Length: 120
Image 1 (cartoon, helix red, strand yellow):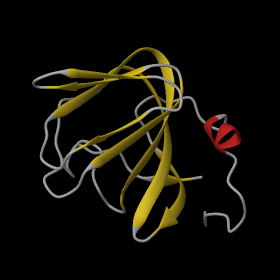
Image 2 (image 1 turned 120 degrees about the vertical axis):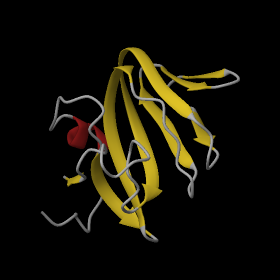
Image 3 (image 1 turned 45 degrees about the vertical axis):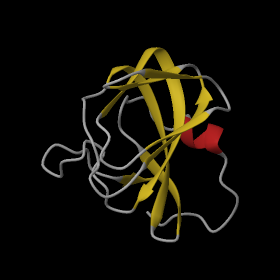
Image 4 (image 1 turned 90 degrees about the horizontal axis):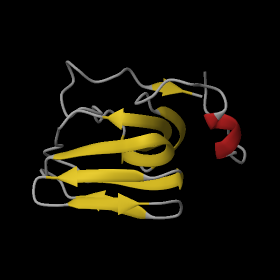
């Protein structure tokens, strides 16, 4: 499915799926994917050698665990994990998050364990 050339309604895109930790690409710019994801529980500890990791919380609460601290995020707050930093996103309850990554970046940092990118 081709991405829309019009305005993107993030709420309607998020309403189209229920799976956790399975980002959906909703737009692209400058060789980057703009994605929405629903999260709950723990994701795997991972890192991205060559790119930062951008998280913007749309709804709920998200914790980004780093080896030396935790960063707590609520709606409207964002955090950028520096390239190479090991991290683990975590949410006690469901949260909705916007992600921006270079197109093709594996969400686990490892292409063999990453989820397949889906466009909606």
